[in-house]
Image 1 (cartoon, rainbow, N blue to C red):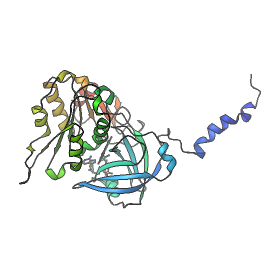
Image 2: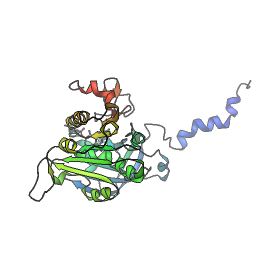
Image 3: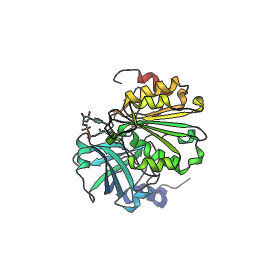
Image 4: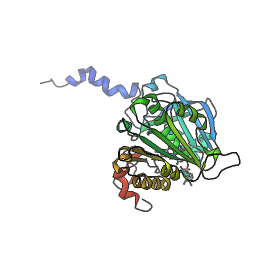
Length: 302
Ligand SMILES: Cc1cc2nc3c(=O)[nH]c(=O)nc-3n(C[C@H](O)[C@H](O)[C@H](O)COP(=O)(O)OP(=O)(O)OC[C@H]3O[C@@H](n4cnc5c(N)ncnc54)[C@H](O)[C@@H]3O)c2cc1C
């Protein structure tokens, strides 16, 4: 039995209790790290990709964000927003985010210049089911900014390309100018990703498909629908029509995943802003399998 006061002498215990004060605790979801903006690339009208490096080199000890996850980006005196990781590859730094300028925080990020700093919490949330894709054909369906959370996934599939069967990436945008990451399609195709694009409104120089992205899915030749996996991200109505079309083509509900977007504040399932029936989209999602949420998706305004 330990003597009274022995704990006072237990240096290891005191050191571990003191640790959060002396060095960052990356398991702590409230821990904010500073990151400096190193590069801005304009993508499409109102959308740009921002690359950040950690200010403190020790921050690169953070857990690397995996495809489908998101960070909370904090602009002091303005607020915090959930933004998916859009990195070229899975590693803890630099951090890449593709952002659409819509409101207060995103506008503040668009006003930033190279050299400015931002706060980052994360990564949070569930991941695209890459392991389930091994030896299967995969269809990725995205609309507009919905391609942003899939960029890391596409790059990760390219890195281990022979693990997967056919990979089809179906991308829909409003106009040809709104097609995100256009400059990367040729590279992706050279690595065996079959990229299919369509636009709602064409221009004179456009020779590609016209119409909604679901039309691409309807025309797609599938080798073995019952074994094919589908992942989708974009406006909810687009995802629902894509899923209906996929099911009518013979895809199985447990093989379908979608990324949900809800108003998020805490990102750790305490504030309740993103509650979706029994789920918290920040913790249980954003990537959820369709068979888990099918019934909930039928409830208007949930
Ligand atoms: C898990 C997750 C991942 C996300 N990933 C990304 C990402 O990679 N890139 C990205 O740009 N956004 C992403 N978002 C959306 C982003 O978090 C919101 O757009 C955010 O609320 C914008 O904050 P804000 O302060 O700029 O706008 P707010 O001030 O919150 O909103 C201003 C106005 O814009 C409207 N609005 C808010 N969000 C959107 C939207 N997405 N589209 C259209 N109108 C909107 C609001 O209804 C409001 O009227 C993600 C959201 C979630 C939940």
